[in-house]
Image (cartoon, rainbow over all chains, first blue to last red; front, top):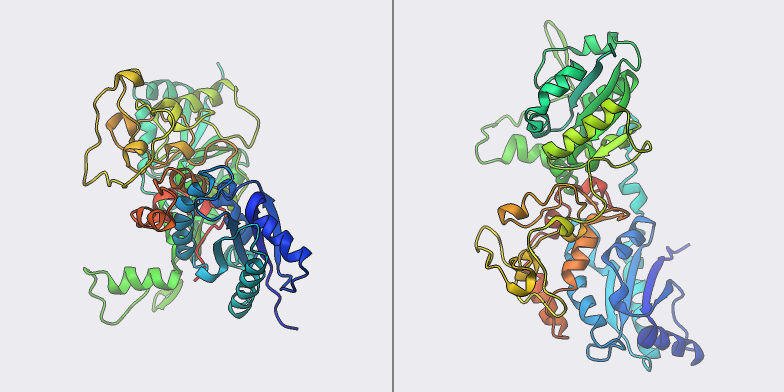
Amino acid sequence: MPFEPKILGIFCNWCSYTGADLAGTARIKYAPNVRIVRVMCSGRVDNSFVLKAFQEGADGVLVAGCHPGDCHYIEGNFKTMGRVPILKEMLRQFGIEPQRFRLEWISASEGDRVAEVVNQMTEQVRKLGPLKWKEVTNTKDLKT
Amino acid sequence: MTEKLKLGVYWGASCGGCDISTLEIAENILKVIEVADIVLWPCVVDFKYEDVRNYPDGYMDVCLWNGGVRNSETREIAELIRKKSKVLVAYGACSAFGGIPSLANLYTKESIFERAYKTTESTDNPKEIYPQTTYTVPEGDLHLPEFYGSVYRLRDVVDVDYTMPGCPPTGKQTWNVIEAIATGKLPPKGSVVGVGDKTVCDECPFEKKTEGVRIERFKRPHLEKPDLTPIAELNNKPQCLLEQGFVCVGSATRSGCEAQCLNANMPCRGCYGPAKDVDDQGSKAAAAIGSLIDTKGDPKRGEEIAAQIVDPVGTFYRFGVANSLLRRAKI
């Protein structure tokens, strides 16, 4: 049985989630490994959401928002652009491989891009294997 | 005449600062001596573990425990002290959150031993001798505690009644808590004590401007001085240090310290731990500060400015890697 990555997707309502919807209505076939949670704006995505996802067992996290300049709330994704680089460096320091977290700008008309990104990321995470963060923090040395 | 409280103070993986900080209650130390007898305090008084083992269970009315859990001796004594104490307080950032020692959770025991016993610049250890947990000499077997793979919080090994953050907790808050214990006016078990309900911003002498301030460049406090000019529109207070570009995590940090560092013109480093109801201090602080970066809608600009924070984990989780969502690094 090949390893099936569990990837959390956090997609913004106005662009990327609608894009994912388009992938569906256009019946584009793509990997089922990303579970999508809808937020109103990628600027809502707090760094702690991503860490919590990994801590709870996700193998990867994909955040998708509107292209710069297209944010429905004008500056919401500006915040994403400021937060994500800090998050990426933090993840690296915690030993989480960079391919496990991805930020993409996907518009409402880019159903094919959703499929492309999901397929790509699924394969990359599949190669890395499961993250199993609960095993990293299993406090086994306290059990002696 | 009411019986005096039996007070214990003990240290795990600690710098000793918390032991000293109990003296910051200044003249209130005389009140403490009036109401309490010290029955354990390795930093200050010569009680032995055997004395503690001989105490009846629950003998200590309160034990203030500082320091994290790094090795098996600390854990063993934590369990012993838990039995011998009525109230056990995780005193200070290390016992509450892992503290600065828990930055070691970014490394492994192997890499720490290699650095400490082999590669530090002042170490001369050609035979590469490392400490062992057991070593046999003609006179018998010698034992050292086992060094754990991670730094743990006190509550990871025993049941903790109250948590008091701070590195160290301030004299005022220490006295507040001792007084509360002495008068029996403690909040429900499990509470964080010696704190306020808000963030450090609430106690800060600097003032933020309203909307629109963005950070174009992060400034390092050891390289640049903040602008302390009082500004009329800000109630004659100088501008918020974070807005000036100094990384200050006060907005994600629990109040209660009276912003001592800010009052010395230094940005907050977060020693009072996460604000109330916050699960992960470091990511909240990073998200708050990240959202202030002046990206001008350009992701590359965002990356360049964010890269000026060279060590996000060390900066945002300085006092509590062990208390973060991820708890330690994967190696």
